[in-house]
Length: 265
Image 1 (spheres, rainbow, N blue to C red):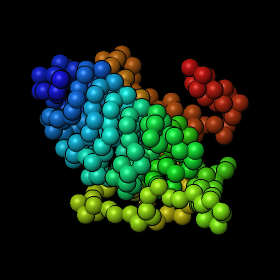
Image 2: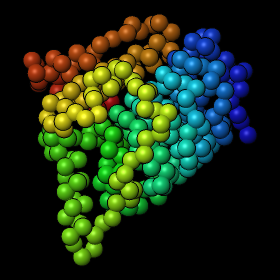
Image 3: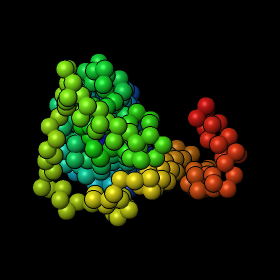
Image 4: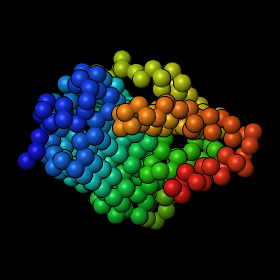
């Protein structure tokens, strides 16, 4: 059984551990997560393809913004109960059930991947139930959850459960509507997120548009962090994605073509 050690961490980066921002620990046969407190500035942790069953308390990494736990055996999200927000949380192809989602109900998650969890996807109303259960998620399995833009998906989900309650065979909520927020999180804020998107903000088209722009900003930051740590300075930081989204109204045809090329690739 492989476990994380300081030696292993040092072998995966050329930086001092106290300054590491990006770690790729994929496909190492890891059965648990520990020693991450040695990397207090960690922003991205890639842990795909291991044998991890439980996520530990991640308060030791207060700057962690992306964690990829796809293709493990995760069945417990207990450690995420103390987290306030994630930019990207990838939990695809694990062993999660609906009760575990209760532990991340209070977490702001910009981009959540849950596909491939059989106990969740076996439900015919999988996507509706996830949206209903996790009110602070912006994007699920690669699709934006809109408030009012195009098709207001959150409103549709809410109406679905109202209509179902009046039918002969009502579809019940997977999780209770009451939401418990751990007291330790009440004073925790991600300034760059909470300042732009207050909790009590009205759901409308403007909010959808600003969320899309912020998702583009976060994606650009993620790409820059990846290139910084894997290309060894060969690629300069860029604002391409942000600029593409902002410039789209000026030249939609060419911007759409580039976006399509990115999707196809």
